[in-house]
Length: 530
Image (cartoon, rainbow, N blue to C red):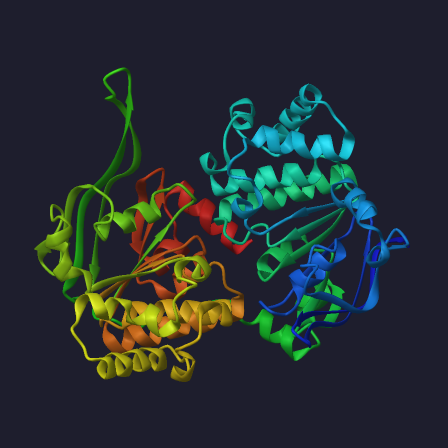
C-alpha cells in the first residue's frame, strides 16, 4: 500500500474568547495517500474548513488553539514547524483553493502579477520567466485568450474564470497535495463539470493527492476515492466512495444522502390571474468609444425574453453564468433600464421612474444568493427586517415590533433573537432572516436569486420546504433563479432556459426536464443527472 502523504491524528482545535476556549473539532483522524482524492463532507459548522486550515496553520493566530493531536506531512509534524518552514510548505508542497475567488484574489493587481508573485516567492523566478510560466498555466486550466487575461483584473473575469485562475495559482508550483475548499459551490453545473474534469486531469498528470471539501454529494460521487463524513467536529464515518453511498452506516450519513431536493411544486390553478406579463424584454448595455463617446456597439445581456408569471406560481430561470438570469430579474424589478413591456397586476410599469415605482415596491421583494453579504452586519435582525416597514408604513414602535416578531415566527426563527446581529447566526438562519425581510411587507411577488446555492443540502432542503409552505399559505408568486436543476424541479411550475441572453427553450418544468428539445437544455439536464 502507498505510504501516507498526510496523516491527521486526533486533531482537536478550539477558539479562545477571553478565558473561554470553544472546541470546534474533536479528535479528527484522517490519512491521505499520493494520487488519492479524499472528500471531506458535512454541514456548515461541522469542522471541515477548520480541519483544512489547521493543516497549513491558516487559522487566526490570536484565537486558534491546537488542543491536541498531530498533522504529519511526509512524517513531519506541521503543528511544531517554524513559520519559515511553513512558508516553504505552503505553495511549494501543499496548494490550496478557497471557496470564493473574489475574496482570495487581490482586486488591485492584474492576474499576471498575482501569478508571478507566487513564483517569485516560492521559486525566486524573475518576472519574464514567471510571466511565461503563468501564461502556460492559464492555457493549461482552459482560460480563453490567456494573453489578455494576464493583463486583466479579477473583476473583469467570470466566476468560472476566476476559479480557474485560483487553480492555476494553487498548482503553478506543482505541489504534492491540493486542498480544495468548496471550489465549485457558486458555479453553474456546466462550469462546475469543467472545473471537476480539470482538477481530475491535472491530478492524474501530476500524481497529486487532493483533499476535497464540499457539502454537495453529487460532486463527491464524481471525484472522490474515499469519503470522510463530519458532524459537530467529529468524523462519524470514513470509507470508500462506493461503501458510503451504497451501504452508509451512520444515521447522519444516511440523512445527508437523502437530503437532496425532491418533491413537486405546490398545487396551483392553471387559470390563475397574471402577476407579471413580460413581452420582448431587452437589456442592452451600450459600448461607447471615440473622442465624442458615441455608441459603437452593445453588450446584449438579455434579448427578447417573454413569459407570464401567474398568482401562486413559480417560474424558474436556468442557465450558465452570464446567460442573463439575474439581469432579467433586476430588469423586471425595474432596477435596470430595459426595453419591452413589463406588466405588473395589469399595470404597465416599464416606463415608470423611481417615484412612479414607489407604490409597487412593497408588493415586490427580493432574496439574494449570499446571506452573508445581503445583510448589514451593523444592524440588528429587528432593524434589518423592519427597514421596509419604516419606508412603506407608518407604524408605532409597538406595532412595528409585533409585525417583526410575526415575520420571524413565519420563517421559524425565535423572535427573542431579534436584537442579535447577523454574525451570530448560521448561513441557513441568515437566509431565513432575508426571507423574513422580504415577507414583512406582505408582497405578492418575490424574486429569489440563487437563494440556496451557498447552503448545505440539509439546510437547502429546509429553506425550500419553508418557501413552499409560505407560497401555499399566502399565494406568493416566485421568480426563481438557479443553476441547480434539482432545486428548480422541486419548486417551479414553469421554466425558461437562457443562453447568451436569449430563451432557447421554455415550458412546463416536468416536461422540460423529462423531454428536453434543445441541445443546450439536454446538455444541462445530462450534467445535473450524472
